[in-house]
Image (cartoon, rainbow, N blue to C red; front, side, top):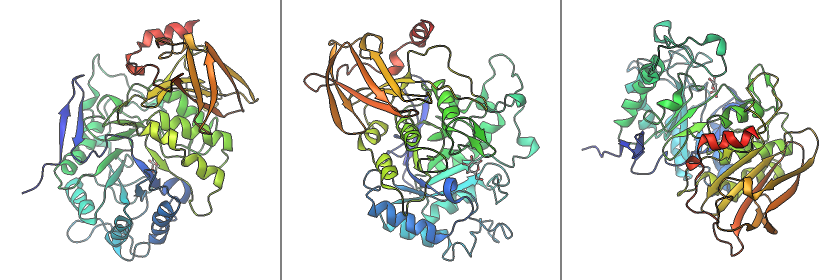
Length: 456
Ligand code: GAL
Protein backbone atom coordinates (compact mmCIF):
# COMPACT_ATOMS: atom_id res chain seq x y z
CA UNK A 1 0.00 0.00 0.00
CA UNK A 2 1.16 3.52 -0.71
CA UNK A 3 2.03 5.70 2.23
CA UNK A 4 -0.01 8.86 2.37
CA UNK A 5 2.90 11.23 2.78
CA UNK A 6 1.21 14.52 2.00
CA UNK A 7 -2.17 16.15 2.31
CA UNK A 8 -3.97 19.43 1.84
CA UNK A 9 -4.26 20.92 5.31
CA UNK A 10 -6.49 23.82 6.28
CA UNK A 11 -4.94 26.21 8.79
CA UNK A 12 -6.71 28.26 11.44
CA UNK A 13 -6.50 31.36 9.24
CA UNK A 14 -8.54 29.55 6.57
CA UNK A 15 -5.68 29.03 4.13
CA UNK A 16 -5.16 25.52 2.82
CA UNK A 17 -1.65 24.38 2.02
CA UNK A 18 0.18 21.27 0.91
CA UNK A 19 1.66 19.70 4.02
CA UNK A 20 4.07 16.79 3.80
CA UNK A 21 5.10 14.54 6.65
CA UNK A 22 8.75 14.89 5.73
CA UNK A 23 8.53 18.70 5.96
CA UNK A 24 9.16 19.34 2.25
CA UNK A 25 8.13 22.89 1.38
CA UNK A 26 7.60 24.09 4.95
CA UNK A 27 10.66 26.33 4.63
CA UNK A 28 11.98 28.02 1.47
CA UNK A 29 13.91 25.61 -0.77
CA UNK A 30 17.69 25.97 -1.03
CA UNK A 31 19.87 24.76 -3.86
CA UNK A 32 21.42 25.54 -7.23
CA UNK A 33 19.90 25.73 -10.73
CA UNK A 34 21.45 25.85 -14.18
CA UNK A 35 19.44 28.52 -15.99
CA UNK A 36 20.94 31.86 -14.91
CA UNK A 37 24.51 30.92 -15.75
CA UNK A 38 24.38 28.03 -18.22
CA UNK A 39 21.03 28.45 -20.06
CA UNK A 40 20.97 25.53 -22.56
CA UNK A 41 24.70 24.82 -22.34
CA UNK A 42 24.19 21.89 -19.96
CA UNK A 43 25.18 18.24 -19.70
CA UNK A 44 25.60 15.59 -17.03
CA UNK A 45 29.12 16.74 -16.17
CA UNK A 46 27.89 20.24 -15.27
CA UNK A 47 25.50 18.83 -12.65
CA UNK A 48 27.93 16.24 -11.29
CA UNK A 49 30.55 18.97 -10.78
CA UNK A 50 27.97 21.21 -9.12
CA UNK A 51 27.08 18.39 -6.74
CA UNK A 52 30.74 17.80 -5.87
CA UNK A 53 31.44 21.49 -5.37
CA UNK A 54 28.32 22.00 -3.21
CA UNK A 55 29.68 19.28 -0.96
CA UNK A 56 33.35 20.38 -1.06
CA UNK A 57 32.65 24.06 -0.38
CA UNK A 58 30.38 23.19 2.54
CA UNK A 59 27.31 24.70 0.86
CA UNK A 60 25.42 21.44 1.24
CA UNK A 61 25.98 21.54 4.99
CA UNK A 62 24.54 25.06 5.03
CA UNK A 63 21.31 23.76 3.49
CA UNK A 64 21.81 24.12 -0.28
CA UNK A 65 20.48 20.69 -1.21
CA UNK A 66 18.71 20.80 -4.58
CA UNK A 67 20.65 20.46 -7.84
CA UNK A 68 18.14 21.66 -10.42
CA UNK A 69 18.22 21.02 -14.14
CA UNK A 70 16.40 23.91 -15.84
CA UNK A 71 15.22 24.10 -19.47
CA UNK A 72 16.73 22.21 -22.46
CA UNK A 73 17.41 18.74 -21.00
CA UNK A 74 15.06 16.67 -23.18
CA UNK A 75 15.30 15.38 -26.74
CA UNK A 76 13.79 18.17 -28.83
CA UNK A 77 13.30 15.92 -31.87
CA UNK A 78 12.13 12.56 -30.48
CA UNK A 79 10.26 14.15 -27.56
CA UNK A 80 8.53 11.00 -26.12
CA UNK A 81 9.13 7.25 -26.34
CA UNK A 82 6.55 4.59 -27.27
CA UNK A 83 5.22 4.64 -23.69
CA UNK A 84 4.67 8.36 -23.78
CA UNK A 85 7.65 9.14 -21.54
CA UNK A 86 9.72 12.27 -22.08
CA UNK A 87 13.12 11.36 -23.54
CA UNK A 88 16.24 12.98 -22.13
CA UNK A 89 18.80 14.25 -24.65
CA UNK A 90 21.12 11.24 -24.96
CA UNK A 91 24.16 13.31 -25.90
CA UNK A 92 23.87 15.60 -22.89
CA UNK A 93 22.74 12.84 -20.51
CA UNK A 94 24.20 9.55 -21.79
CA UNK A 95 23.04 7.62 -18.68
CA UNK A 96 19.61 9.28 -18.79
CA UNK A 97 18.42 11.56 -16.01
CA UNK A 98 18.19 8.54 -13.72
CA UNK A 99 21.92 7.79 -13.99
CA UNK A 100 22.77 11.37 -13.05
CA UNK A 101 20.16 11.50 -10.29
CA UNK A 102 21.50 8.33 -8.67
CA UNK A 103 24.91 9.96 -8.36
CA UNK A 104 23.51 13.27 -7.05
CA UNK A 105 21.38 11.50 -4.45
CA UNK A 106 24.40 9.40 -3.41
CA UNK A 107 26.16 12.68 -2.54
CA UNK A 108 23.37 13.37 -0.04
CA UNK A 109 21.85 16.00 -2.33
CA UNK A 110 18.47 16.17 -4.08
CA UNK A 111 17.67 16.45 -7.76
CA UNK A 112 15.38 18.92 -9.49
CA UNK A 113 14.01 19.08 -13.02
CA UNK A 114 12.08 21.53 -15.22
CA UNK A 115 8.90 21.08 -17.23
CA UNK A 116 6.08 23.24 -18.49
CA UNK A 117 2.32 23.56 -18.03
CA UNK A 118 1.97 24.20 -21.77
CA UNK A 119 2.85 21.99 -24.72
CA UNK A 120 6.48 23.13 -24.74
CA UNK A 121 9.01 24.96 -22.59
CA UNK A 122 9.98 28.53 -23.42
CA UNK A 123 12.66 27.11 -25.71
CA UNK A 124 10.17 24.66 -27.21
CA UNK A 125 11.38 21.48 -25.54
CA UNK A 126 8.63 19.03 -24.56
CA UNK A 127 6.01 20.31 -22.09
CA UNK A 128 3.70 18.34 -19.78
CA UNK A 129 0.21 19.54 -20.74
CA UNK A 130 -1.95 16.40 -21.27
CA UNK A 131 0.94 14.23 -20.03
CA UNK A 132 0.92 15.30 -16.39
CA UNK A 133 0.39 11.86 -14.87
CA UNK A 134 3.03 10.01 -16.87
CA UNK A 135 5.49 12.86 -16.36
CA UNK A 136 4.96 13.00 -12.59
CA UNK A 137 5.44 9.22 -12.43
CA UNK A 138 8.51 9.32 -14.66
CA UNK A 139 10.12 12.07 -12.59
CA UNK A 140 9.44 10.08 -9.41
CA UNK A 141 10.96 6.93 -10.93
CA UNK A 142 14.06 8.88 -11.87
CA UNK A 143 14.40 10.01 -8.24
CA UNK A 144 13.46 13.65 -8.79
CA UNK A 145 12.73 15.73 -5.68
CA UNK A 146 11.85 19.15 -7.13
CA UNK A 147 9.84 20.17 -10.17
CA UNK A 148 10.02 23.69 -11.57
CA UNK A 149 6.89 24.02 -13.66
CA UNK A 150 6.99 26.76 -16.29
CA UNK A 151 4.26 28.55 -18.21
CA UNK A 152 5.26 28.85 -21.88
CA UNK A 153 3.56 27.64 -25.06
CA UNK A 154 0.08 27.56 -23.57
CA UNK A 155 -2.50 26.73 -26.27
CA UNK A 156 -5.08 29.44 -26.90
CA UNK A 157 -7.90 27.41 -25.35
CA UNK A 158 -5.92 27.29 -22.13
CA UNK A 159 -5.31 31.02 -21.88
CA UNK A 160 -7.09 32.92 -19.13
CA UNK A 161 -10.34 34.72 -19.91
CA UNK A 162 -9.20 37.57 -17.66
CA UNK A 163 -5.44 37.73 -18.05
CA UNK A 164 -3.36 39.28 -15.28
CA UNK A 165 0.44 39.41 -15.50
CA UNK A 166 2.12 41.84 -13.09
CA UNK A 167 4.79 42.88 -15.60
CA UNK A 168 2.38 43.07 -18.56
CA UNK A 169 -0.33 45.57 -17.57
CA UNK A 170 -1.10 46.00 -21.29
CA UNK A 171 -2.59 42.47 -21.37
CA UNK A 172 -4.88 42.96 -18.35
CA UNK A 173 -8.59 42.23 -18.81
CA UNK A 174 -10.79 43.34 -15.93
CA UNK A 175 -12.56 40.33 -14.36
CA UNK A 176 -16.16 40.47 -13.09
CA UNK A 177 -16.54 41.75 -9.49
CA UNK A 178 -15.32 39.26 -6.85
CA UNK A 179 -13.87 36.99 -9.56
CA UNK A 180 -12.11 33.99 -8.02
CA UNK A 181 -8.79 33.48 -9.83
CA UNK A 182 -8.54 29.94 -8.46
CA UNK A 183 -10.98 28.95 -11.21
CA UNK A 184 -8.78 30.56 -13.88
CA UNK A 185 -7.30 28.30 -16.54
CA UNK A 186 -3.84 29.05 -15.19
CA UNK A 187 -4.87 27.65 -11.80
CA UNK A 188 -6.49 24.61 -13.41
CA UNK A 189 -3.38 23.85 -15.49
CA UNK A 190 -1.19 23.96 -12.38
CA UNK A 191 -3.62 21.76 -10.46
CA UNK A 192 -3.46 19.25 -13.31
CA UNK A 193 0.16 18.66 -12.29
CA UNK A 194 -0.36 19.10 -8.54
CA UNK A 195 -2.78 16.17 -8.35
CA UNK A 196 -0.56 13.49 -9.90
CA UNK A 197 2.35 14.79 -7.83
CA UNK A 198 0.29 14.42 -4.64
CA UNK A 199 -0.66 10.87 -5.52
CA UNK A 200 2.97 9.74 -5.82
CA UNK A 201 4.71 7.74 -3.17
CA UNK A 202 7.46 10.35 -3.25
CA UNK A 203 7.42 13.99 -2.17
CA UNK A 204 8.33 16.29 -5.03
CA UNK A 205 8.68 19.96 -4.20
CA UNK A 206 6.35 21.79 -6.62
CA UNK A 207 7.82 25.11 -7.71
CA UNK A 208 5.35 26.99 -9.88
CA UNK A 209 7.07 29.22 -12.40
CA UNK A 210 3.98 31.29 -13.21
CA UNK A 211 5.46 34.83 -13.16
CA UNK A 212 2.79 36.15 -10.74
CA UNK A 213 0.00 35.40 -13.24
CA UNK A 214 -3.69 35.03 -12.31
CA UNK A 215 -2.70 36.51 -8.92
CA UNK A 216 -1.10 33.20 -7.95
CA UNK A 217 -0.50 34.39 -4.40
CA UNK A 218 -4.26 33.97 -3.86
CA UNK A 219 -4.35 30.23 -4.73
CA UNK A 220 -0.68 29.22 -4.78
CA UNK A 221 -0.70 27.80 -1.26
CA UNK A 222 -3.17 25.04 -2.08
CA UNK A 223 -1.42 24.27 -5.36
CA UNK A 224 2.34 24.22 -4.81
CA UNK A 225 5.17 24.95 -2.40
CA UNK A 226 6.39 28.16 -4.04
CA UNK A 227 5.30 30.42 -6.86
CA UNK A 228 7.25 32.84 -9.01
CA UNK A 229 5.82 36.32 -8.53
CA UNK A 230 7.22 38.20 -11.52
CA UNK A 231 8.97 37.92 -14.89
CA UNK A 232 12.55 36.68 -15.15
CA UNK A 233 15.39 38.17 -13.15
CA UNK A 234 18.53 39.45 -14.88
CA UNK A 235 21.90 40.34 -13.29
CA UNK A 236 21.34 44.10 -13.25
CA UNK A 237 20.64 46.47 -10.38
CA UNK A 238 18.11 49.02 -11.73
CA UNK A 239 16.04 48.79 -14.88
CA UNK A 240 15.71 45.78 -17.15
CA UNK A 241 17.27 44.21 -20.24
CA UNK A 242 15.75 42.03 -22.97
CA UNK A 243 15.94 38.92 -20.78
CA UNK A 244 14.48 40.25 -17.56
CA UNK A 245 14.23 42.61 -14.64
CA UNK A 246 16.92 43.94 -12.36
CA UNK A 247 17.02 43.48 -8.60
CA UNK A 248 15.37 46.83 -7.78
CA UNK A 249 12.29 46.11 -9.89
CA UNK A 250 11.87 42.80 -8.05
CA UNK A 251 12.36 44.42 -4.64
CA UNK A 252 9.75 47.08 -5.31
CA UNK A 253 7.27 44.47 -6.44
CA UNK A 254 8.14 42.30 -3.45
CA UNK A 255 7.49 45.20 -1.07
CA UNK A 256 3.83 45.08 -2.09
CA UNK A 257 3.58 41.33 -1.48
CA UNK A 258 5.61 40.81 1.70
CA UNK A 259 2.58 39.36 3.48
CA UNK A 260 1.77 36.67 0.87
CA UNK A 261 4.30 34.14 2.12
CA UNK A 262 4.49 31.77 5.09
CA UNK A 263 5.20 28.20 6.19
CA UNK A 264 4.41 25.68 3.40
CA UNK A 265 3.99 28.34 0.70
CA UNK A 266 6.51 30.92 -0.50
CA UNK A 267 6.65 33.80 -2.91
CA UNK A 268 9.54 33.16 -5.29
CA UNK A 269 11.32 36.26 -6.59
CA UNK A 270 13.42 34.09 -8.90
CA UNK A 271 16.80 32.39 -8.70
CA UNK A 272 19.80 34.25 -7.32
CA UNK A 273 22.01 36.30 -9.62
CA UNK A 274 24.61 36.75 -6.86
CA UNK A 275 27.99 36.57 -8.61
CA UNK A 276 26.58 37.15 -12.08
CA UNK A 277 26.67 39.87 -14.74
CA UNK A 278 27.00 43.48 -13.77
CA UNK A 279 26.03 43.23 -10.12
CA UNK A 280 28.65 44.81 -7.85
CA UNK A 281 29.74 43.24 -4.59
CA UNK A 282 27.43 45.57 -2.64
CA UNK A 283 24.50 44.87 -4.97
CA UNK A 284 25.07 41.13 -4.62
CA UNK A 285 25.00 41.52 -0.83
CA UNK A 286 21.72 43.44 -0.93
CA UNK A 287 20.21 40.95 -3.37
CA UNK A 288 21.09 38.01 -1.12
CA UNK A 289 20.17 39.66 2.19
CA UNK A 290 16.75 40.71 0.97
CA UNK A 291 15.96 37.47 -0.84
CA UNK A 292 16.88 35.57 2.32
CA UNK A 293 14.80 37.76 4.59
CA UNK A 294 11.82 37.90 2.21
CA UNK A 295 11.83 34.11 2.64
CA UNK A 296 12.17 33.46 -1.05
CA UNK A 297 13.74 30.13 -2.12
CA UNK A 298 17.54 30.51 -2.18
CA UNK A 299 18.53 28.90 -5.46
CA UNK A 300 22.10 29.78 -6.45
CA UNK A 301 22.44 30.68 -10.13
CA UNK A 302 26.15 31.22 -10.60
CA UNK A 303 29.15 29.11 -11.66
CA UNK A 304 30.53 27.48 -8.53
CA UNK A 305 33.90 26.37 -9.87
CA UNK A 306 36.31 29.25 -9.40
CA UNK A 307 33.71 31.32 -7.49
CA UNK A 308 35.29 34.41 -5.89
CA UNK A 309 35.77 34.17 -2.14
CA UNK A 310 33.81 37.38 -1.51
CA UNK A 311 30.81 36.03 -3.45
CA UNK A 312 30.98 32.68 -1.71
CA UNK A 313 31.04 34.49 1.64
CA UNK A 314 27.73 36.16 0.74
CA UNK A 315 26.07 32.84 -0.14
CA UNK A 316 27.49 31.29 3.03
CA UNK A 317 26.22 33.92 5.47
CA UNK A 318 24.92 31.71 8.26
CA UNK A 319 22.86 34.38 10.00
CA UNK A 320 20.94 35.33 6.85
CA UNK A 321 20.39 31.67 6.02
CA UNK A 322 19.14 31.10 9.57
CA UNK A 323 16.61 33.91 9.12
CA UNK A 324 15.43 32.35 5.84
CA UNK A 325 15.20 28.88 7.39
CA UNK A 326 13.73 29.89 10.77
CA UNK A 327 11.45 27.10 11.99
CA UNK A 328 9.51 29.29 14.44
CA UNK A 329 8.83 32.61 12.67
CA UNK A 330 7.60 32.40 9.10
CA UNK A 331 6.94 36.03 8.19
CA UNK A 332 8.92 37.81 5.51
CA UNK A 333 10.48 41.13 6.39
CA UNK A 334 8.06 44.04 6.08
CA UNK A 335 8.87 47.44 4.58
CA UNK A 336 8.38 50.36 6.99
CA UNK A 337 8.85 54.10 7.16
CA UNK A 338 8.27 54.43 3.45
CA UNK A 339 8.90 57.97 2.32
CA UNK A 340 5.98 57.97 -0.11
CA UNK A 341 4.13 55.16 -1.86
CA UNK A 342 5.99 52.01 -2.89
CA UNK A 343 7.57 52.87 -6.24
CA UNK A 344 5.74 51.33 -9.19
CA UNK A 345 7.87 48.91 -11.13
CA UNK A 346 8.86 50.35 -14.48
CA UNK A 347 11.71 49.76 -16.89
CA UNK A 348 13.64 52.77 -15.58
CA UNK A 349 13.07 52.29 -11.92
CA UNK A 350 16.00 53.25 -9.74
CA UNK A 351 14.32 54.26 -6.47
CA UNK A 352 14.23 51.56 -3.83
CA UNK A 353 12.30 50.70 -0.71
CA UNK A 354 15.01 51.23 1.90
CA UNK A 355 13.75 50.10 5.35
CA UNK A 356 12.72 46.54 6.23
CA UNK A 357 12.00 44.90 9.59
CA UNK A 358 11.47 41.27 10.57
CA UNK A 359 11.81 38.79 13.40
CA UNK A 360 13.56 35.46 13.93
CA UNK A 361 14.45 33.29 16.90
CA UNK A 362 17.65 35.34 17.19
CA UNK A 363 15.96 38.73 17.65
CA UNK A 364 14.40 41.59 15.73
CA UNK A 365 16.17 42.49 12.51
CA UNK A 366 16.33 45.72 10.56
CA UNK A 367 17.69 45.93 7.02
CA UNK A 368 18.69 49.31 5.62
CA UNK A 369 19.23 49.42 1.87
CA UNK A 370 21.07 52.45 0.52
CA UNK A 371 19.47 52.89 -2.90
CA UNK A 372 21.41 56.11 -3.58
CA UNK A 373 24.33 56.22 -5.96
CA UNK A 374 26.44 57.74 -3.15
CA UNK A 375 27.68 56.10 0.05
CA UNK A 376 25.91 57.59 3.07
CA UNK A 377 24.68 57.36 6.64
CA UNK A 378 21.37 55.73 7.49
CA UNK A 379 19.62 56.18 10.83
CA UNK A 380 16.68 54.71 12.65
CA UNK A 381 14.77 55.90 15.70
CA UNK A 382 13.79 52.83 17.70
CA UNK A 383 10.40 54.39 18.49
CA UNK A 384 9.59 54.25 14.74
CA UNK A 385 10.54 50.63 14.14
CA UNK A 386 7.64 48.15 14.38
CA UNK A 387 8.60 45.43 16.85
CA UNK A 388 11.19 47.60 18.60
CA UNK A 389 8.69 50.35 19.46
CA UNK A 390 6.54 47.80 21.33
CA UNK A 391 9.49 46.21 23.14
CA UNK A 392 9.78 46.63 26.91
CA UNK A 393 13.21 48.20 26.48
CA UNK A 394 14.68 51.08 24.50
CA UNK A 395 18.28 49.90 24.88
CA UNK A 396 19.47 47.15 22.57
CA UNK A 397 22.60 45.31 21.51
CA UNK A 398 22.91 46.05 17.80
CA UNK A 399 24.68 43.27 15.90
CA UNK A 400 26.05 43.26 12.34
CA UNK A 401 24.89 40.15 10.47
CA UNK A 402 27.60 40.64 7.82
CA UNK A 403 30.59 40.57 10.15
CA UNK A 404 28.98 38.51 12.92
CA UNK A 405 30.10 41.15 15.43
CA UNK A 406 28.23 43.56 17.68
CA UNK A 407 28.22 47.29 17.03
CA UNK A 408 27.51 47.74 20.75
CA UNK A 409 24.73 48.89 23.06
CA UNK A 410 22.46 51.67 21.80
CA UNK A 411 19.54 53.61 23.29
CA UNK A 412 16.79 55.28 21.22
CA UNK A 413 18.55 55.43 17.85
CA UNK A 414 21.29 53.95 15.67
CA UNK A 415 23.24 55.33 12.70
CA UNK A 416 25.39 53.31 10.31
CA UNK A 417 27.48 54.01 7.19
CA UNK A 418 26.08 52.13 4.20
CA UNK A 419 27.84 52.02 0.85
CA UNK A 420 25.89 52.80 -2.31
CA UNK A 421 23.47 49.89 -3.07
CA UNK A 422 24.64 47.94 -0.01
CA UNK A 423 22.38 46.83 2.85
CA UNK A 424 23.10 47.08 6.56
CA UNK A 425 21.92 43.85 8.21
CA UNK A 426 21.15 44.55 11.87
CA UNK A 427 20.00 42.28 14.65
CA UNK A 428 18.56 43.69 17.87
CA UNK A 429 18.56 41.89 21.21
CA UNK A 430 18.11 43.18 24.77
CA UNK A 431 21.15 44.18 26.78
CA UNK A 432 21.15 40.61 28.17
CA UNK A 433 21.16 39.18 24.65
CA UNK A 434 17.50 38.09 24.68
CA UNK A 435 14.88 38.50 21.99
CA UNK A 436 13.42 41.99 22.52
CA UNK A 437 9.84 41.14 21.57
CA UNK A 438 9.14 37.43 21.00
CA UNK A 439 5.38 37.95 20.66
CA UNK A 440 5.67 40.33 17.72
CA UNK A 441 5.47 39.31 14.06
CA UNK A 442 5.28 41.67 11.07
CA UNK A 443 1.94 40.20 9.95
CA UNK A 444 0.40 41.37 13.23
CA UNK A 445 1.25 44.95 12.31
CA UNK A 446 -1.72 46.35 10.48
CA UNK A 447 -1.11 47.58 6.94
CA UNK A 448 -2.74 50.93 7.79
CA UNK A 449 -0.12 51.40 10.49
CA UNK A 450 2.56 51.04 7.85
CA UNK A 451 0.72 53.51 5.64
CA UNK A 452 0.31 55.96 8.53
CA UNK A 453 4.05 55.96 8.99
CA UNK A 454 4.64 56.33 5.29
CA UNK A 455 2.38 59.40 5.11
CA UNK A 456 4.58 61.35 7.51
C1 GAL B 1 11.32 31.03 -18.09
C2 GAL B 1 11.61 30.95 -16.61
C3 GAL B 1 13.11 30.96 -16.43
C4 GAL B 1 13.71 29.79 -17.17
C5 GAL B 1 13.31 29.84 -18.63
C6 GAL B 1 13.79 28.64 -19.39
O1 GAL B 1 9.94 31.03 -18.30
O2 GAL B 1 11.01 32.04 -15.96
O3 GAL B 1 13.42 30.91 -15.05
O4 GAL B 1 13.29 28.58 -16.59
O5 GAL B 1 11.89 29.90 -18.74
O6 GAL B 1 13.41 28.68 -20.73
